[in-house]
Image (spheres, rainbow, N blue to C red):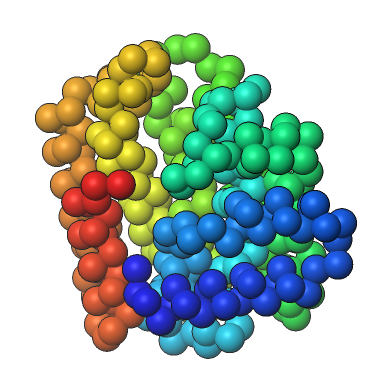
Length: 266
Protein backbone atom coordinates (compact mmCIF):
# COMPACT_ATOMS: atom_id res chain seq x y z
CA UNK A 1 0.00 0.00 0.00
CA UNK A 2 1.24 3.55 -0.73
CA UNK A 3 2.59 4.76 2.63
CA UNK A 4 1.46 8.37 2.29
CA UNK A 5 -2.11 7.42 1.47
CA UNK A 6 -2.17 4.88 4.30
CA UNK A 7 -1.05 7.53 6.76
CA UNK A 8 -3.70 9.98 5.60
CA UNK A 9 -6.40 7.32 5.91
CA UNK A 10 -5.24 6.39 9.44
CA UNK A 11 -5.10 10.03 10.50
CA UNK A 12 -8.57 10.72 9.12
CA UNK A 13 -10.10 7.63 10.76
CA UNK A 14 -8.60 8.61 14.12
CA UNK A 15 -9.95 12.14 13.74
CA UNK A 16 -13.46 10.89 12.95
CA UNK A 17 -13.38 8.71 16.06
CA UNK A 18 -12.03 11.51 18.29
CA UNK A 19 -15.02 13.57 17.21
CA UNK A 20 -17.37 10.91 18.59
CA UNK A 21 -19.37 11.47 21.78
CA UNK A 22 -21.03 8.05 21.94
CA UNK A 23 -21.09 5.85 25.05
CA UNK A 24 -17.55 5.09 26.17
CA UNK A 25 -17.69 1.32 25.74
CA UNK A 26 -19.32 1.66 22.32
CA UNK A 27 -16.61 4.08 21.19
CA UNK A 28 -13.86 1.85 22.57
CA UNK A 29 -15.19 -1.25 20.86
CA UNK A 30 -15.62 0.60 17.56
CA UNK A 31 -12.05 1.89 17.74
CA UNK A 32 -10.79 -1.60 18.64
CA UNK A 33 -11.87 -2.91 15.24
CA UNK A 34 -11.52 0.24 13.13
CA UNK A 35 -8.11 1.50 14.30
CA UNK A 36 -6.28 -1.81 14.39
CA UNK A 37 -3.93 -1.38 11.44
CA UNK A 38 -5.85 -3.30 8.78
CA UNK A 39 -4.57 -3.42 5.21
CA UNK A 40 -6.87 -0.52 4.13
CA UNK A 41 -6.94 -1.90 0.59
CA UNK A 42 -10.43 -0.60 -0.21
CA UNK A 43 -9.93 3.03 0.85
CA UNK A 44 -6.48 3.06 -0.77
CA UNK A 45 -8.03 1.80 -4.00
CA UNK A 46 -10.55 4.62 -3.93
CA UNK A 47 -7.86 7.24 -3.36
CA UNK A 48 -5.56 5.80 -6.04
CA UNK A 49 -8.30 5.66 -8.66
CA UNK A 50 -9.41 9.19 -7.86
CA UNK A 51 -5.80 10.35 -8.09
CA UNK A 52 -5.32 8.54 -11.42
CA UNK A 53 -8.46 10.17 -12.82
CA UNK A 54 -7.64 13.67 -11.60
CA UNK A 55 -9.78 13.78 -8.46
CA UNK A 56 -9.11 15.85 -5.37
CA UNK A 57 -8.02 13.76 -2.41
CA UNK A 58 -9.63 16.01 0.18
CA UNK A 59 -13.01 15.38 -1.48
CA UNK A 60 -12.46 11.62 -1.68
CA UNK A 61 -10.98 10.91 1.77
CA UNK A 62 -14.29 11.03 3.73
CA UNK A 63 -15.85 8.58 1.27
CA UNK A 64 -12.83 6.26 1.59
CA UNK A 65 -13.07 6.36 5.38
CA UNK A 66 -16.80 5.67 5.29
CA UNK A 67 -16.17 2.62 3.13
CA UNK A 68 -13.54 1.38 5.59
CA UNK A 69 -16.05 1.77 8.43
CA UNK A 70 -18.51 -0.37 6.47
CA UNK A 71 -15.81 -2.98 5.86
CA UNK A 72 -14.80 -3.12 9.54
CA UNK A 73 -18.42 -3.43 10.64
CA UNK A 74 -18.79 -6.40 8.30
CA UNK A 75 -15.73 -8.10 9.83
CA UNK A 76 -17.11 -7.72 13.36
CA UNK A 77 -20.41 -9.30 12.39
CA UNK A 78 -18.80 -11.97 10.20
CA UNK A 79 -16.72 -13.17 13.17
CA UNK A 80 -19.76 -13.61 15.44
CA UNK A 81 -20.61 -17.11 16.72
CA UNK A 82 -23.80 -17.13 14.64
CA UNK A 83 -21.79 -16.42 11.48
CA UNK A 84 -18.21 -17.68 10.90
CA UNK A 85 -17.47 -17.98 14.65
CA UNK A 86 -13.87 -16.73 14.41
CA UNK A 87 -12.15 -15.96 17.71
CA UNK A 88 -9.20 -14.07 16.17
CA UNK A 89 -9.06 -11.16 13.76
CA UNK A 90 -5.83 -9.55 12.54
CA UNK A 91 -3.76 -11.23 15.21
CA UNK A 92 -5.88 -10.32 18.21
CA UNK A 93 -9.17 -11.48 19.79
CA UNK A 94 -12.26 -10.76 17.71
CA UNK A 95 -14.59 -8.04 18.92
CA UNK A 96 -17.09 -10.45 20.46
CA UNK A 97 -14.30 -12.25 22.34
CA UNK A 98 -12.90 -9.00 23.66
CA UNK A 99 -16.17 -7.18 24.47
CA UNK A 100 -18.89 -9.80 24.44
CA UNK A 101 -21.34 -10.67 21.69
CA UNK A 102 -23.87 -7.92 22.44
CA UNK A 103 -21.26 -5.17 22.46
CA UNK A 104 -19.71 -6.52 19.26
CA UNK A 105 -23.07 -6.35 17.50
CA UNK A 106 -23.46 -2.75 18.69
CA UNK A 107 -19.92 -1.87 17.55
CA UNK A 108 -20.77 -3.11 14.07
CA UNK A 109 -24.08 -1.25 14.10
CA UNK A 110 -22.26 1.88 15.25
CA UNK A 111 -19.65 1.75 12.50
CA UNK A 112 -22.27 1.24 9.79
CA UNK A 113 -24.35 4.13 11.10
CA UNK A 114 -21.30 6.34 11.50
CA UNK A 115 -20.38 5.65 7.87
CA UNK A 116 -23.85 6.77 6.81
CA UNK A 117 -23.61 9.95 8.89
CA UNK A 118 -20.19 10.73 7.47
CA UNK A 119 -21.48 10.44 3.90
CA UNK A 120 -24.60 12.48 4.65
CA UNK A 121 -22.38 15.33 5.80
CA UNK A 122 -20.61 15.50 2.42
CA UNK A 123 -22.05 17.96 -0.07
CA UNK A 124 -23.11 16.51 -3.43
CA UNK A 125 -21.69 13.35 -5.02
CA UNK A 126 -24.95 11.45 -4.53
CA UNK A 127 -23.94 8.80 -7.08
CA UNK A 128 -20.79 8.00 -5.11
CA UNK A 129 -22.77 7.74 -1.87
CA UNK A 130 -25.18 5.38 -3.60
CA UNK A 131 -22.31 3.27 -4.95
CA UNK A 132 -20.92 2.76 -1.45
CA UNK A 133 -24.21 1.67 0.06
CA UNK A 134 -25.17 -0.45 -2.93
CA UNK A 135 -21.89 -2.22 -2.29
CA UNK A 136 -22.66 -2.53 1.42
CA UNK A 137 -26.08 -4.05 0.74
CA UNK A 138 -24.66 -6.45 -1.85
CA UNK A 139 -22.03 -7.50 0.69
CA UNK A 140 -24.76 -8.33 3.24
CA UNK A 141 -26.59 -10.29 0.53
CA UNK A 142 -23.40 -12.25 -0.11
CA UNK A 143 -23.07 -13.02 3.59
CA UNK A 144 -26.64 -14.34 3.52
CA UNK A 145 -25.80 -16.51 0.52
CA UNK A 146 -22.75 -17.87 2.30
CA UNK A 147 -24.81 -18.66 5.39
CA UNK A 148 -27.75 -20.28 3.63
CA UNK A 149 -26.92 -21.62 0.16
CA UNK A 150 -25.98 -25.29 0.22
CA UNK A 151 -25.25 -25.98 -3.46
CA UNK A 152 -21.57 -26.65 -4.12
CA UNK A 153 -21.11 -25.47 -7.69
CA UNK A 154 -19.42 -22.72 -9.65
CA UNK A 155 -22.57 -20.58 -9.90
CA UNK A 156 -23.02 -20.52 -6.12
CA UNK A 157 -19.32 -19.80 -5.56
CA UNK A 158 -19.33 -16.89 -8.01
CA UNK A 159 -22.53 -15.43 -6.56
CA UNK A 160 -21.23 -15.53 -2.98
CA UNK A 161 -17.85 -14.02 -3.71
CA UNK A 162 -19.08 -11.43 -6.21
CA UNK A 163 -21.25 -10.09 -3.41
CA UNK A 164 -19.60 -10.92 -0.10
CA UNK A 165 -16.04 -9.96 -1.07
CA UNK A 166 -16.28 -8.30 -4.45
CA UNK A 167 -19.02 -5.76 -3.77
CA UNK A 168 -16.95 -3.46 -1.56
CA UNK A 169 -13.99 -3.57 -3.97
CA UNK A 170 -16.34 -2.62 -6.80
CA UNK A 171 -17.80 0.15 -4.63
CA UNK A 172 -14.33 1.52 -3.86
CA UNK A 173 -13.37 1.69 -7.52
CA UNK A 174 -16.71 2.93 -8.78
CA UNK A 175 -16.96 5.65 -6.13
CA UNK A 176 -13.39 6.73 -6.84
CA UNK A 177 -14.35 7.31 -10.46
CA UNK A 178 -17.67 9.01 -9.64
CA UNK A 179 -15.79 11.44 -7.39
CA UNK A 180 -13.28 12.25 -10.12
CA UNK A 181 -14.37 11.40 -13.67
CA UNK A 182 -17.86 9.85 -13.81
CA UNK A 183 -17.38 8.87 -17.44
CA UNK A 184 -14.92 6.21 -16.21
CA UNK A 185 -17.29 4.71 -13.60
CA UNK A 186 -18.18 1.61 -15.60
CA UNK A 187 -14.59 0.91 -16.54
CA UNK A 188 -13.46 1.26 -12.93
CA UNK A 189 -16.34 -0.97 -11.79
CA UNK A 190 -14.94 -3.70 -14.04
CA UNK A 191 -11.52 -3.07 -12.53
CA UNK A 192 -13.01 -3.36 -9.02
CA UNK A 193 -14.65 -6.66 -9.91
CA UNK A 194 -11.28 -8.03 -11.01
CA UNK A 195 -9.52 -6.82 -7.85
CA UNK A 196 -12.22 -8.33 -5.65
CA UNK A 197 -11.95 -11.68 -7.40
CA UNK A 198 -8.15 -11.56 -7.21
CA UNK A 199 -8.28 -10.86 -3.48
CA UNK A 200 -10.75 -13.69 -2.82
CA UNK A 201 -8.87 -16.30 -4.83
CA UNK A 202 -5.56 -15.51 -3.15
CA UNK A 203 -7.38 -15.73 0.20
CA UNK A 204 -8.65 -19.17 -0.80
CA UNK A 205 -5.13 -20.36 -1.61
CA UNK A 206 -3.77 -19.03 1.69
CA UNK A 207 -6.60 -20.66 3.69
CA UNK A 208 -6.70 -23.88 1.65
CA UNK A 209 -5.82 -26.29 4.46
CA UNK A 210 -8.27 -24.79 6.97
CA UNK A 211 -11.06 -24.54 4.37
CA UNK A 212 -10.65 -28.19 3.37
CA UNK A 213 -10.90 -29.28 7.01
CA UNK A 214 -14.05 -27.21 7.49
CA UNK A 215 -15.61 -28.26 4.19
CA UNK A 216 -15.99 -24.68 2.91
CA UNK A 217 -16.88 -23.90 -0.68
CA UNK A 218 -13.90 -22.01 -2.13
CA UNK A 219 -12.05 -21.77 -5.44
CA UNK A 220 -9.47 -24.24 -4.15
CA UNK A 221 -11.96 -26.79 -2.81
CA UNK A 222 -13.98 -26.58 -6.04
CA UNK A 223 -11.25 -26.28 -8.70
CA UNK A 224 -8.04 -27.33 -6.95
CA UNK A 225 -4.99 -25.25 -6.11
CA UNK A 226 -3.27 -25.48 -9.51
CA UNK A 227 -6.28 -24.20 -11.46
CA UNK A 228 -6.98 -21.52 -8.86
CA UNK A 229 -3.43 -20.20 -9.19
CA UNK A 230 -3.94 -20.01 -12.95
CA UNK A 231 -7.21 -18.13 -12.38
CA UNK A 232 -5.26 -15.73 -10.14
CA UNK A 233 -2.70 -15.04 -12.87
CA UNK A 234 -5.44 -14.55 -15.48
CA UNK A 235 -7.45 -12.21 -13.24
CA UNK A 236 -4.38 -10.16 -12.33
CA UNK A 237 -3.62 -9.75 -16.03
CA UNK A 238 -7.22 -8.70 -16.71
CA UNK A 239 -6.96 -6.01 -14.02
CA UNK A 240 -3.66 -4.81 -15.50
CA UNK A 241 -5.24 -4.65 -18.94
CA UNK A 242 -8.11 -2.46 -17.72
CA UNK A 243 -5.72 0.24 -16.47
CA UNK A 244 -3.18 -0.16 -19.27
CA UNK A 245 -4.15 3.18 -20.90
CA UNK A 246 -3.35 5.12 -17.72
CA UNK A 247 0.00 6.59 -16.72
CA UNK A 248 1.44 8.51 -13.81
CA UNK A 249 2.29 7.67 -10.21
CA UNK A 250 -1.20 6.53 -9.14
CA UNK A 251 -1.51 4.17 -12.12
CA UNK A 252 1.88 2.67 -11.31
CA UNK A 253 0.90 2.23 -7.67
CA UNK A 254 -2.27 0.44 -8.78
CA UNK A 255 -0.17 -1.90 -10.92
CA UNK A 256 2.11 -2.56 -7.95
CA UNK A 257 -0.96 -3.30 -5.83
CA UNK A 258 -2.23 -5.85 -8.35
CA UNK A 259 1.12 -7.63 -8.36
CA UNK A 260 1.30 -7.53 -4.56
CA UNK A 261 -2.17 -9.08 -4.30
CA UNK A 262 -1.24 -11.79 -6.76
CA UNK A 263 1.78 -12.89 -4.72
CA UNK A 264 0.61 -12.06 -1.18
CA UNK A 265 1.35 -14.44 1.65
CA UNK A 266 -1.29 -13.04 4.04
